[in-house]
Amino acid sequence: MSSDRREALIAEVVLAVRAHQSAVDEVDEAAANFLGVNRTDLRCLDILDRGGRLSAGELASGSGLTSGAITSVIDRLERAGYVRRLPHDSDRRRVLVELTDEAQRRSGLIYGPIAQSAQPLLEHCSDDELAFIRDFMQRGRDILLQNAATARALSDPAHVPEPTASEGHPAVSPH
Figure 1 (cartoon, rainbow, N blue to C red):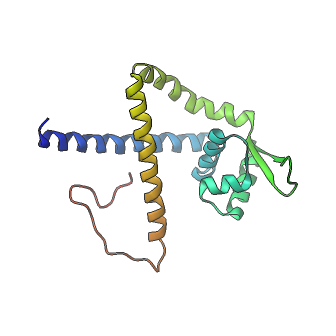
Figure 2: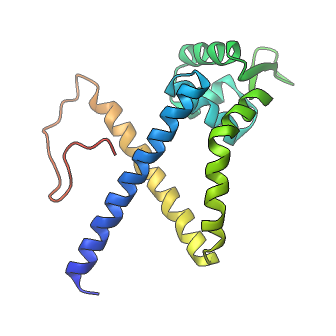
Figure 3: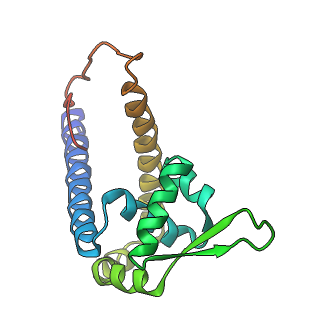
């Protein structure tokens, strides 16, 4: 493959990833509206769905929220009927949080059909292709989280860097 064709293909992949991220964002916005929660609360529901029963501290850590903020999130989600607090088995000062059946049922109405639609796509892939997709997604997630930390640091008024943009890449992009 020529270097021009390879550069064009890489650019197409970058655009496809950005379009995919926009579609995920659109689904998440619709899901948050359907569930009657904000996007932070939706992210916490997802963390609980992936992680199972978690302590409030683990949920705070996984979401990047402070302990005070996570208490407010848990309060809202509990009022909505999406999570329940449980006493910790060995530490009475700690609280565990888990999804309710209602949260799983309602979120399943949105995300279940997506998983069902993706299943045939994944079944069509070879083991090597599945491993590549898994690794690509995991490395991409790591890159995004590193850049989220950078963006948070840039929000600090004491840290005002010189604006730069890589050649061939947008200086401002939602994705």
